[in-house]
Length: 228
Image 1 (cartoon, rainbow, N blue to C red):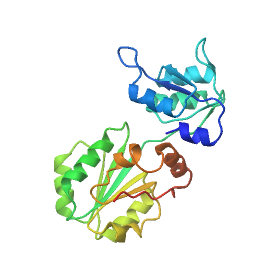
Image 2: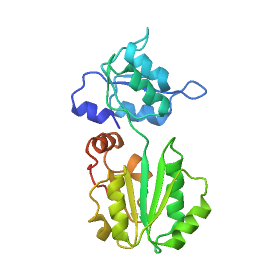
Image 3: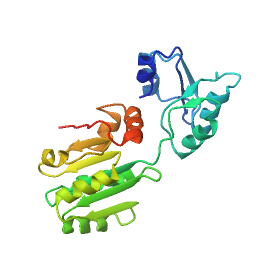
Image 4: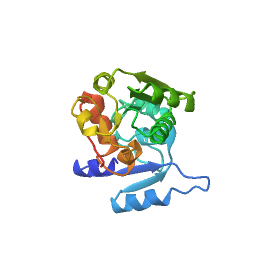
């Protein structure tokens, strides 16, 4: 997700670090993509130690001018601490997902997407619905999830609340999502309909996840992304 923007920016040398598995090997899919993108150097290291290696250099890993790319809380903290010794793209904050749904929405899809979001460390999952029955069923199915269920009078109010939250990811899982999306002003990526999960937009289709996060954190008015 970071190599293509670097290529477009005409970066002279691109170095990739990736954590190895228990056998000391990097995932072969990552290696194939790195080869297709003509990455200059690849090193088997990850986490905070990978960030430190890039920032200060070692006997085998060169010091770089800028570190980009997402990571867990340890990677984010490492990037914060090395900023100044080298440049970084940003410190990505906790991710969030808002789902707007009503009584016609399929609860199986809602539960799956809320659970997927809750897997992120400090990730926040929010369901906004005008259906009391749906809210009750979702709460009973995932009582320990880190997030909120907001009950509204109607879908227009749901859109208004979502605009105030300005989520990184917004799923509109109602029968006519086109009507609701016209009311949305603030969101990073918008997914319309039951067959447009957030994970597809982050890793399979649409704009780069890294680029979208950067745009979102700067203005809360990034691109609208839709999968039909």
